[in-house]
Amino acid sequence: MFGGRSRRELEHRVARLERGAGAPEGPIAQAKHLARAGGAWGDGFGLLATRSLQIIIVLLLTAGVVFGMSTLSTVVIPILLALIFASTFAPVMSWLRAHRVPSALATVLVLLTIVLMLAGVGWLIVWAVRDQWDELSAQAETGFAQVMDWVKTLPFAPDHDQLIEWQQNVTDFLTGFLTSSQFGSGALAGVGIVTNFVTGLILMVVVLFFFLKDGPQIWRFLLRPFEGEALARAERAGDKTVQTLGHYVRGTASVAAVDAIGIGIGLLILQVPLALPLSVLVFVLAFIPIVGATLAGILAALVALVANGPLSAVLVVGVVVLVNQLEGNFLQPVLMGRALKLHSLVILLALTIGTVLSGVLGAVLAVPIAAVVWGIIQVWDGPDLPAKAFRRKPGEE
Image (cartoon, rainbow, N blue to C red; front, side, top):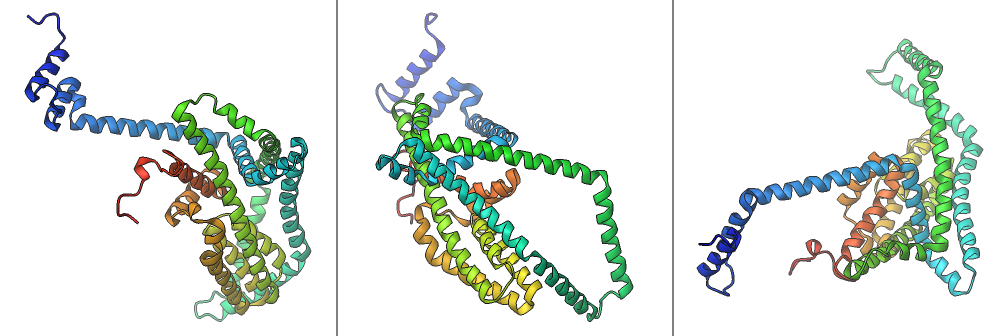
């Protein structure tokens, strides 16, 4: 009788008759309809399996992207650094263009400024360390001798012969390592690292030049495949990326400069050697949130301990803690703003992932990348409308 009709049509008509023509389909009827139409995939276990499969596919794609970026780190990291520097100096480029400075000339001026800043920081550290290295090494020998004298006064201290034996073992180990094939392979690996660094630096400068000069044109070219709402969303994401990176780097640099000046003044007052390079190191490590300030304080305290003794080291720790508290409670909220504030747990996870993937440089890049991701989420569905899953619930603070 119904040979000309499909089974799905019959089931649909029966369902409509059961609930009444035109009446809204109830949850039970929807479940029955899905179960009949989808078979094993229409029940609860089928939905769980579908979601699990989707999660697995997303994780595989993410792992593939991360693996590809790690493999091509010599290319990916210079491009990321170029994007960060271009976003940081975007207001400068806009100001120069607004004052009718030719685009090529403005690009060269900004690029030279960035290169000179990076070279100046590196040269300042190397020069200061070399200038005070002899003094510091002599004080280190004196400090080590004082520590050994103190160890000898302990009730469980090793005797003189044991100390000599330990020193000889360390010397033999270092001598054997330096003359072994492992050291040769390590030296070759060091040459490879230097080569990759120089290659990445040159690539970053070249890419940065084009980002500064033709950044808007490159972005418009990348937006060509998008239309409608997808185009608007991509434009919002791009604007938010440049804005977030620029605010983050400029704010962090300002905070780092204040930290370096404050700690540097404290080190000079306490007459700690290498005060200038330690201040520069504080500035550099400030770009690694939480961990950087702690590491800088430890290094400064160690230098003070070796050079001037335990009291000076304690005072240095006090100076570092005081400066960090003032920066964290007063300066950082003003310069960084609430829009870029990430939870400490998110920062620690980002630092861990970045360090595992790309070492120290990954730790430096991890937090601004996390800030960009969070910023894009905040404008996903509109200029001030976050993605649906991340919107605040009614009554939530």
